[in-house]
Length: 154
Image (cartoon, rainbow, N blue to C red):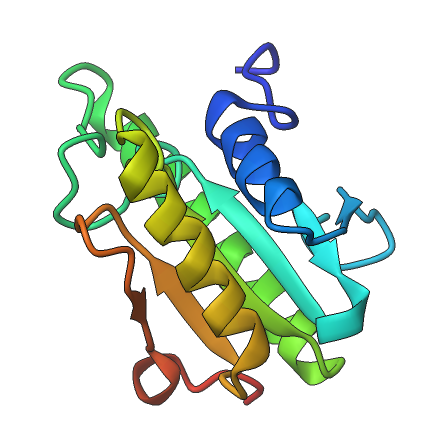
């Protein structure tokens, strides 16, 4: 698993191209921030994570399959990933940062017009006052707000 890439993944590169085309500039993998976010927008005080649906267990997603062998190992692994993500989001919120999660399924296999909608959704979210959001692979690229459920900044 050490050979599994964490940076410059296909979905991340695709999102970077979309946002760059829209004129947005960002920093990459800022190690001074909790979780080393994939994209950092200092101007918007926002950290963006591009999460793989498998590794971060995206509920209800076709890409979030569960391995059939070594079930206990994988359950522990996925639970640890989710706990680490939660810790990172909370630490960022406590430092005044906003968090946006873009799921792999919002990018993978999408046509150009859907990717354009994704870029618009990210730009809309960046200009909003929301402290947390998720963009999933529902062909409208809308942002799912979970502030009440997540208790960000607590």
